[in-house]
Length: 249
Image (cartoon, rainbow, N blue to C red; front, side):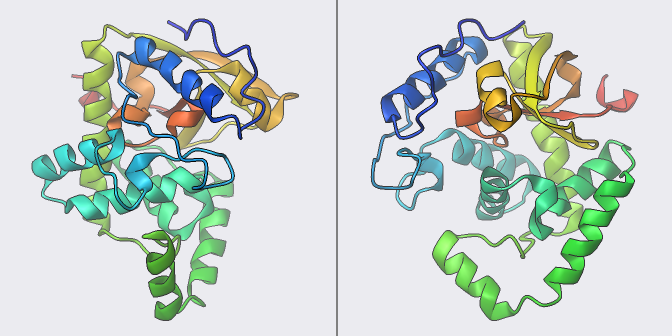
C-alpha cells in the first residue's frame, strides 16, 4: 500500500503554510488519521507552521493524546513522554545524547545489535555530554522545554515506552487493514532505527541523488506520527531492522 497522489504543487517552499497543511491532509485518508487539530501560525518558526503539541498552549494534538494514553498503561509520567517526543521532532535520535537513549532501548528491546558507526557516534556524544553543566540543561528546558543533553526517564522506563509505542503503532495500522507500506529515504539507511517518508517528493528534499525505495511489512514499523513518534510534516515512518518472534504473536 502506498500513499497516492503526493503533493505535486511542490511543498518546495516551506513558508507556504497552506501547501504544508494540504500535504498533511493527504496522509489523513491513508492512515485514517485526523490532522484537523493542526493550526497555522506564521510567526512561530521559519517553516511558517508549527505543530500545536509542541507549543506552549495547545495540547489537543496527536502526540500529546498518545502520551496520555501511553502514560495510563505504563505509569510513566505524561510530561516525561512528551519530552522524549520533542527530542525526536527536531533532531535524528542517533545525533543527540538524549535521543541515543531511544536507539539503545530499541537495540535491547528488539535484539538489534548496534553497528560500529552507532557505537562511535554514541561514544562521542557521551564524552561531549560530560562537559554539559546542569545550568546548561536548565536553560535548555526554559527555552525549549527539553534538552538534547538530558534523559527525562530511566533506561527501564524507556524500554517500557519503546514497547508501548510499537504496540500502539501495530494496533493503528492493523485496525486500518494496512499490511505493508511503500516508503522512501533520501540518503543512507539507518541500522537499528530507519527514518523514511511515505513521499518520494519529501525524501528527495534530503538527498535526491540517493533515493532508497522499498516496501516493508507493518511488523517492522516502530512508530508513525499517530503513535506519538515521527514527524508528521515529513510523513515519517520509523522502522526497525528486524522484530523478534515474540512481538509478532
